[in-house]
Each structure stands twice: as structure tokens, then as C-alpha cells.
Image (cartoon, rainbow, N blue to C red):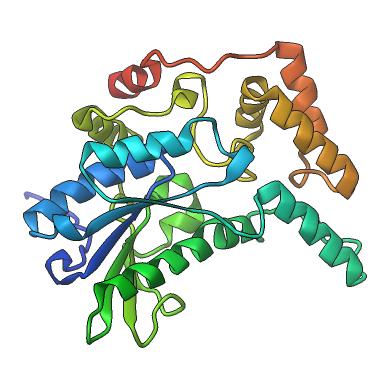
Length: 291
């Protein structure tokens, strides 16, 4: 008896031909880089390439050096409009210190001011909020006499975490929508593997950040609260001065950088191993495609 094999249905794709604005969020990291290449192809087929734009949220000093310029270069490769936004009240380290003072002013001496998987205010305030302001500006520029249809694209992947694996490919964003716009959040590469991501980068021919060749697995904040300890040690070897600033803030706040993981320990391990230079030798791409 033969067993019938069924292929999984393709992931849903918004109707790009009907979109008034397609916004690609770019961190300049490998996932958003691969997503942008994929988006360009899909938008071109849909006849909507003229509605595709790119936004990069500048995280300030906590961002890897050259990230903003790289995001701009990746957008320029496709001839796409490029926007930069940031949190106007200050960068992440400033926000953490401000949050600490706010918590203490309320008499809360136990809640850590650091972001955490359960308190991702870094994403909501440093990225999602500024992007919503940009969407408001771009929709106003369209001058439509009806609500604009906006597709907001993020390079999140299910392989990164269980929480992301539970997210839908496409969802209405009621919080970002209004009487002047309807916003859908789309995760175009949600189901992609690491190899698919690196293959798209190879196909695109666009440069990727040297942090990957230097041993980093992801390009978010240099010291992301979601990173594993070994990655944080590598980051501290690549950016020792920034690691020292994190350690000083940790001591000032009285709470460890992550639950069970102190920046003091990260810095001690990094010092024992010695500093690392950022290098760009193509090794991350070669290793990913050879796997």
C-alpha cells in the first residue's frame, strides 16, 4: 500500500498589489537582509515595487558599529527609499537608567530595570513605537481619501524561539491601525531555515555585517538579553568598552543584566580570553552554505 505524501500549504502572503505602502523593517542583520531580498522579488512580481520602502531603527551606541550604514547600503542596492528612526527620549542604556529611577520613585525596589523576555520594552519603545510614527508620516504623504492599506514586514523566524514559532505569518495590527490606515504585520521568512537565509544573502550579493564572521549568531543589540552567554562573551571581546559600560550600569542598578547571568561574569570571561577584532572574511556565509 502506498502512503500519500502531502506537502504543507505555502504560507499566506498579503495582497501586495492592493497595498498602498509596504514597509520593510531592517536591522541590517542576516534575517532582515534575506527578507528584503525576498520582498523585492515578491513586490516586483505583484507590480508593487514602487510601494516598498525600508526603515532602520537606530539603537545608538548599543548597536554594532556600521549597522546603520549597512542597512542603508542594502536598501540602496535595490534602489529603495530608506528611513532612519530612533527613540527621541534617548537610547537603550539611557532608557534603562530612567526606568530604574522611575521604579524606585514608585517604591518598587525589586523589579529589575533591564529588559527581559517578559519585559520587551526595548523592542516596543526603541523599534515598534518609532516605526508607527513613520507609518503615520508616510500615510499622510499618500494623501488618500480612504484608509491606506499598509503591510509592515518583519524578519522574524520561528527557529529563533518558541514564542516566535507561535506567531502567525500575517496578522492585523489593531494597535497601529486607525481611521486613516489599516496595518497588517507580515513575517515573510517566518518558516525559513538558517540555510535558506544565507542562500538568499548569497543570491542577493549584498554585504552582511562582519559581526557574523567574528562569531556572533545574531545582529541585534550588541548585548541582547535574548542572547546566550557564549554569544555575550564574544560580544564583550569584540566591544570591551561597551561591555564595561554595561557592567558599570549593572552595579549602579543592583540587578544582574539577565536572570542568573551577570555582566560582571561576562566581562571576566571575555578578559580571560582576550579582545577580538571585527573581521569580514566571508566565513559565516561559507560555513552556512557548506552545512
